[in-house]
Image (cartoon, rainbow, N blue to C red; front, side):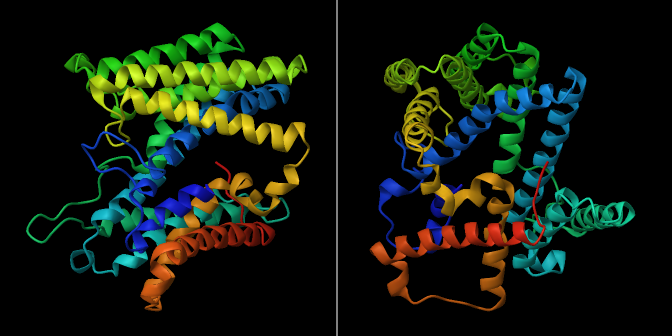
Amino acid sequence: MVLMIFVNDLWSLKDVPLWLEHAERGVDGIGLADVVFPAFLFIVGLSMPFAIGNRRQKGDTDWQLVKHVMLRTIALLVMGVFLVNGETFNESETGMARFLWNPLCCFSFILIWNTYPKSVNANLVIAVKAIGILLLILLAFIYRGGEDGDIQYFASHWWGILGLIGWAYMVSGLITIFAKNNFYAVFAGWVFFCILSMVSKAGLIPDLFSFIPDAILGGTLTGLTMCGVLTSKIFQHYRNLHDDKTLTIVLIGFSIILIVFSIATRPYWGLAKLGATPAWLFLCSAFTIMAFIAIYWVADVMGKANWFAIIKPAGTDTLLCYLIPYFAYAATSLLNVHLPDVLLLGGLGLLKSFLFAMLCVFMTGSLNRLGVRLKL
């Protein structure tokens, strides 16, 4: 999440090194920014067996787990669509300043999905959530987007980052639930979506399946999440055996195989995030597994988890941390804040974006202490 906020803030800088940015559509290659989103999808899958296992230990049935996954998916889709509409917002037609859209949406999300203390009156919580829902309905009703002469109403133009995560989470969550800790079922799910990614890029999917969202039908995004689930199952197996050495060897070997798959598929469809190509799926999965191994050895084996304490709020309340920049950018627009060019160039500019990401983490932690904590 810290990296995501950092790369998402690079737009505010000038002369950013190409290797840090998103590669443009049609380019065969990736930058650092193109690795962050797939890592996030992978981590969603990585956490899934633990989360579902914990709920099962508390007595949740399969139906309750499915209900939980579906409700979370709906929440992510709703948030994704509202934020996406902000990209084509038309101030004059809507009758509202552009910079107000995203923070008002995010404020509504917080009202609806905040975890309120048990000491708060239940009726008050219902009323606050209702205000959030009504505010979203009002925003959707008054919304106008597009250019003058081609005005558009509120719609799911695309699902946005949160929506794409939602679709991949839904499919991977359902597979994980019904796999019931069966490694081979999880492995089969991962293989299926890897093959689907290649079939989709080859243009071999029949039109009769066009009703399925591209985030699922394309195979790549769900393949990233399922690779996280598969890695988690491997991790759990060797952790139960207390065999860190074999765990590391197996995961490094898996990463090497994925890199080979990436090299083998790149000549056919290229290596690109915007194209969601199989080579991107395999390479980013390998990168994330290797990063996971390194962090595991530092945090768990060496017992240095406290090294990451400064960014802990980004992991314990990731969604709120993701929303904080929308408020920050709105505040700078409202206050008409403009940094001098010297702070937007070179190393100083990159430091500025890194410090901005850390500020968002700090604000998340501060809001958590005040009782604001999002939970879907």
